[in-house]
Image 1 (cartoon, rainbow, N blue to C red):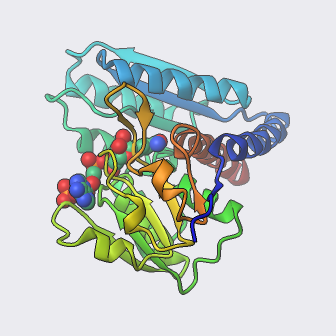
Image 2: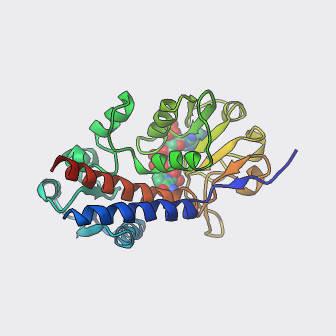
Length: 287
Ligand code: NAP
């Protein structure tokens, strides 16, 4: 029977979590430590410039120190690696984020591996990925971490549920699947070579769509009552920001759904703040 799914509001949840970050940051400051994030941008990519500005602004609003370092597109890889090395040793910086994509002449993985795992607040370092893989403490990539917080916010019990993740990137799909698995869901990962996506998604209690294509998930592909998390960010023919999910159709079938905009996007930045704060808290604990 068609119904209207309940929205999982990423803006409201972010507001709540950022208030908690601000409170914890104030407590750290009282002990002489201001959590600090360095955001490194190379080149003129317009979307990247918007993303980094939003990250810096979010830091400021939550009482975190932030520095934005911008370098020209021609910056040699060695120069960038030297800068990362200096940030690794800077005691005012607890988190380092290198905005991707990097220009083609720079090996992005090499730059990510140069970040100290203790400051890897994006969670992209192979050591952070390995920690997630084996269930050890480490920084979780912000986007799937935000999705987990959204599921937690509705009190969703993942144990024994079937979760289908569409997409297998290193920054969203794969870590998402590992986080769901850690919470005892049975996890299926789908990708571009999946033969019958609909057959997979129709079995799912939870669907996470992280593809980057409009209408990858439509109402006929969703089991009634499923929870749907839409990570995708696309523009439709009218230039409007949309996810991967046919929102108007799927909301008639799902029990819960995240909107785009106002869903996973704000949660990604929020989890960056959480990771940066926790990096600083670890330093305070060790002091
Ligand atoms: P990506 O690296 O391009 O990965 C896309 C994945 O989708 C790949 O694994 C690909 O499969 C799979 N795929 C492509 N076509 C498919 C199809 N028809 N059916 C099933 N799977 C298909 O992208 P990403 O970095 O993970 O990002 C995914 C989306 O999330 C993008 O729209 C991105 O902008 C958005 N995003 C949003 C946020 C946020 O904060 N809201 C953060 C990060 C990303 P193969 O591996 O086989 O190629």
